[in-house]
Structures are given as C-alpha cells and as structure tokens.
Image (cartoon, rainbow, N blue to C red; front, top):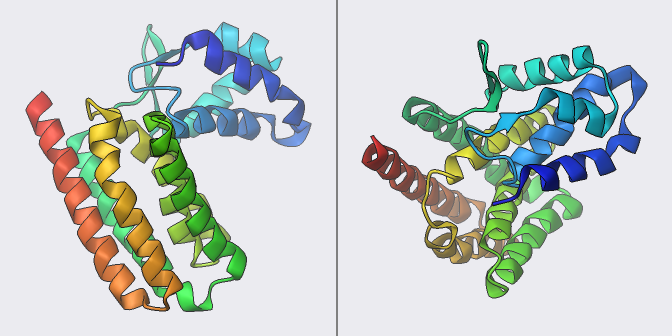
Length: 231
C-alpha cells in the first residue's frame, strides 16, 4: 500500500501545473487521480496542513478542493475528525453499476462512428492491463481496467460523458479495495476486456454490448458478495 509520503510527493511534484484561475479544481484533480490510481484508499485521512504545504495553496483553497470531492462522493468530512476517503456503500455500488451500464453500453453502440483515436485508447488500455499482469503488477492492472472502461464510454464522443465517467470510475476504484486480492478480482476480466475490444475491432458492436452487459453483471454480483461477506 502506498505511504502517505509517496502520494503527497506525487501531488507536490505536479504543483507547477496549477492554474491560478482554477487552483481548487486542479487540486481536486490531483487528489482524484490519486484515488483513481489506487494510491488513496477508503478510510485514508487527508492531512490538510501537509497537503497545503505540498502544493503551496491556502487552507481555503484546499477546503474548496475537498468540498468538490465530497460532492463527487469521493471524500467525506467527519466533524472534529477531518476529511477522509469515502467507503462506497452496497447501495452506492448498485447505483454505480446502474449508471455504468448506461454510459459504457452507449459507448459500445457508438463504436462504429467513433474516431480511430478513441478506438485506439480502448486497445491501449487492454494492452496496458495485459503487460501489468505479466509483470505481476496487479494494482496497475486495476488502473488499466479503469482506463479501459473510461475508453469505452469515451466512444460516445461527448465531453460531458467523459467527465461523468471520470468521476464515476474514480468512485469505482474505491470499490475495488473491497476485494481482498487484486489478482483474484482482476485476472479473470483481462481476457474479457480483450474480447470486448476484439469484437469492436471486428465491427460487431451488438456482440460487444452483450459481452459488456454480462461482464458488468458478473462484476457487480462478485463485488456485492464481497460487501455482504464483510457485513
């Protein structure tokens, strides 16, 4: 598991990218990226003072960034305790999959009209996941899986869908932490990601959509069982 210092160092290194006109939003982006990449896990406390020093912003700016991420359901503020990375509930899990089916299946249906660059992002995410698995980097497999599903929704070609999916799948990464072994969870889906890509490449979006729906049904059932087992 990444240490507090490692993710703080990454955020500090990116501070030069901050734009004065949207500093709080950019700080929120940096924190969201840490969640999406699996470095910030459910229950982790975000040290306000350390973060302010890391990115050289005021407390007011940091609190605005926190507020944005609370609205996205990624963080939670606990009175007199601080700000923590949120744990997704079982009810939230069901809703995440409900929305994912809408966005990702629409992306697959739009594949015949998608740009070559958008289709290439699907293939690149699949290949990244396969390389990470071959190297035994299972947390990176999870990150590649997030990118794969973002790329599927990206086939719609809508900036609004892209933004919705980016926020949705950051929340989804928090769900992955509910599974005890990243390898046991992610490994079976590598071949299914490849199959969905291959069906799209073959010009069969209808079969790709059927495969995706079955995939999402299976993943939701597996995660729901894990939630129930934890009580």
